[in-house]
Length: 167
Image (cartoon, rainbow, N blue to C red; front, top):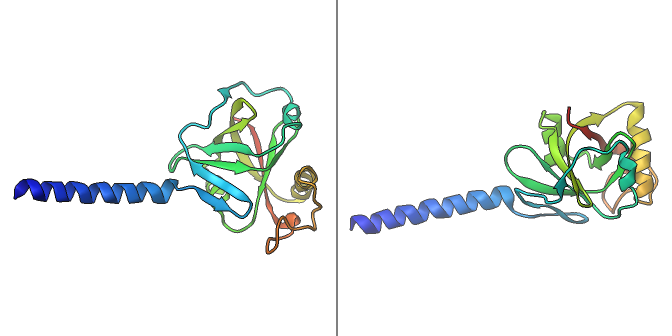
């Protein structure tokens, strides 16, 4: 009888752990395809930051990034490179990764092509926000007054984050 009780308790704990793990690592389908997946490793070769990140601008497709800490998720983002770093943007909807960066969890690994860089982000506000958002919008083939999809805010209202090599 005691072994049946132990098996039942063990099964219950396992179910709770699996459900807990799934809640924090389940793939998230964003409005434009796969937005994030569970992940400990994002691949690529850990590399020194280049002197000029614009070498990556010919690369099409999303950038992968993984913030330090828990939960461990790999996010997929549109981006544009500048000489000193990477511009990313997100809707101003209180989304997961933007809120973590604003709360101080701004260190991450960014993967572009086969290179992975240790970076840190800062939210860009003020006049520089529109300058950077315009570069991001141009790479995506849109203007600041366009929405990415129906129901979305115009791009000029999106939050902008600038990633530079970790100091």
